[in-house]
Image (cartoon, rainbow, N blue to C red; front, side, top):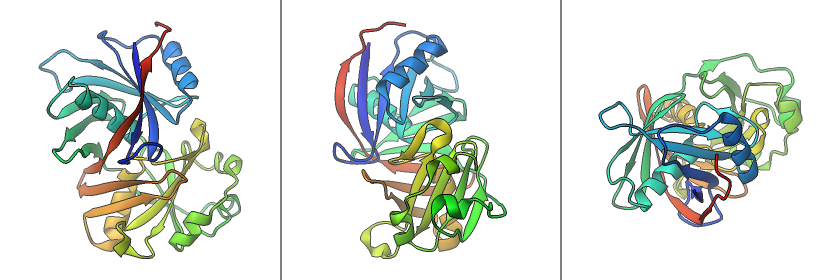
Length: 273
C-alpha cells in the first residue's frame, strides 16, 4: 500500500503543513483502530485515508482524517494533499468530490499548479471573552467568536500581527477552552506584502499543540476578515515556524481555499489492514 507525505499550502518542500495520504483500492475503509494506529505511526497533524466510490453518486471518493490521537470532522490541508496525490498520479484529471463527515467537499486543479477546495463556510457566533484565555495565551483578546460544529474552535482576534507572531501560549490551559482548539488572528501590518491577515492555530484538544497551516480554520477566518475588510477575496498567512499561504474566496455558505502542495515522501506501508 502506497503512503505519501505531502506538504500542503506551500510551493516548496519542508514548509506548509505535512499530511500523510493513503489511497485505498478497496470500496470500504479498514477498521477504525487500524486507521488510528497508522495515523499515530505517521505522527503528523493529519493523515488522510480515501477510497473510491461507485460512479454516478454525489461524490467520487470517501475521505476521512485522523490526527495521532483522534478522528476529526474536517481538515483542509490533508484534503488539499489528497487532491494533489490524485492529480499528480493520474488517478483523476478533473474536479474531485469527497464524501466526508462535514458533507461533500470539492477540489479543483488549475493549470498553474494550484488547487482550490470547496468547503462549507463556518458560522461565527460572538461570545464573552473567557476569563482564563488572556492568561493562557499571554495576550488580551480584542474579540472572541465560537465557530461551527465541524470546527469546534474559538476564533480569537488579537491587537496586531506582532502579538500573534510572538505568542508563547500555555497550550495545556488552552485545551480546556474549546473542543478542538484556538485560532488566533490579526490584520496584516503591511497588506502590501502579499497577505491580508495572519493566524496561528493551537489544537491541544486533538493532540496538536500548534498546527503549521490549517485550511479548515480559514473557513472561519474568511468570513471574519471579509466582514472587517469589505472584500470576499483574501489571502491569509499562517505564521507558524513552517508558514503557509491560504487564498480564500467567500461565496456565501461556501468558502473556496486555494493553495499549492508538494509531495516529499512516496513509500510503501508494509502493514496491511
